[in-house]
Length: 453
Image (cartoon, rainbow, N blue to C red; front, side, top):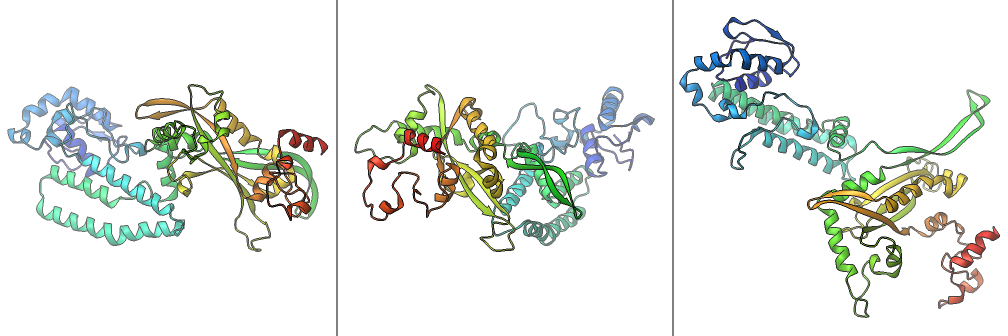
C-alpha cells in the first residue's frame, strides 16, 4: 500500500493508518486520496478512505504483498488489531489514544498506547498534587511544568530522536517510536494550562459545573452611578457547591463507602455497657434517635461547620472588608476525617449579607439540600454494586461566635445571658462551678424565648 503524500510502500492498511497519523500528523477529518491500482479518488475523512480500500483494493494489495511483509511483528500487520472505526481521539477519558482491540486480550502483551495513557495520567496526578500544596500558587505550578519540559523532557526526546534516526531504518518501527517520542514530549498534554486541566477533570467526572449562585435578596434601591443617584435593581447572591456530586464522587473513590459501612457496623454493634467507651458520634443516643425512621436503610452522618474567612483584605485582619461566611462539611466515619482532604466546601456567603438579611434567607438553599439528602438519598456505585445511601446532618460545629450566629443566640459574649447551653445570667456565671440542671436550655424554654422576641 502506498502513501499518497510521500509514496512510501507499507505492508498493510493498519500500517498505512499509523503512517498517516504519526508521520504526516493527519487527523480523522483531513482530505485523503487513494492511489492504489492507479485509483485517484479523494475522501473527506480517514474512515471513508479505509472503507474504500477494504471494499475495492484489499484483495489486490494482499496478493501483491511479499511474504516477508506477513512475517513482521504482529502489532502493525495483524489484521485482528485493526478497527474500521479507528481514529485519533482527544477525549480526556481515553487520555491519548484508543486502546488496541484484540480478539483475545493477554496481560503479557505490551501495549504502547496503554503505557502512554498511564504516562499522561501520572502527569495529571503530579500537577494536581502541586495544586494541592498550599506552598505553590498557580504560576509556580506552571513554572515547574515549564522547567521539567525544557530541562528534562526536551533533552530526553532529542536523545531518543538522534538514536532512532541513526539505528532504525524500517519506516514501520520508525513510526512506532515516533509515537512514543510524541507521548513523552507532550507529557503535560492535559494539564499544561488551567483550562486544559479543568476540561480533563470535567470529562472524567472528577469536578462539576453544577455549582450555582442563589438569590438571597432582590430589591430596587437608590445607587450611585457615574456621580448620579438613580434607582436600580440590587441583587444579593451566594454560591452553593454541587453537594450531591461531591458526596457521590468521594464515596465512589477508593472504596470509601464500603469502608465507612464496615466501620459503622463495627461501632454500632458495640454492646451498651460501662466497658464500651463512646469513640464516635454514631454510638451516642442522638444518632440512634435520628435513624429511627430509616429502618433497614443505609444511613451516614455528616457534620457541618461554619466560620468566617477574610480574602484580599488590605485594611487589616479586623476590618471585615471582604469577609466571607464559609460553610464546610465532613464525615465522622471517614478515616482521618479532620484532614483538609476530607473536609469539603458547601457554600460561600458574604458575612455582611448574613448580618443584613438573616439566616433564613442566606441558608435556605443549604437547608433544602440537607433535607434532600435525608429524604431522597444518593445512589453510589461500589465494587459490590450500586447502593442507595441517606445522609443525615448529625452536628453543627464551629466556634462560639459561629454557632451563636447560626442558632440565632446572642452574638455578644458580654451579654447577660450569653451561654447557649444554659440560662444562667452573667452574675451567677462568675461564681458557678457546677452544672445547675434547672437552668439548662431545652425545647420548651427555647420556644418561649423566641416567642418573647
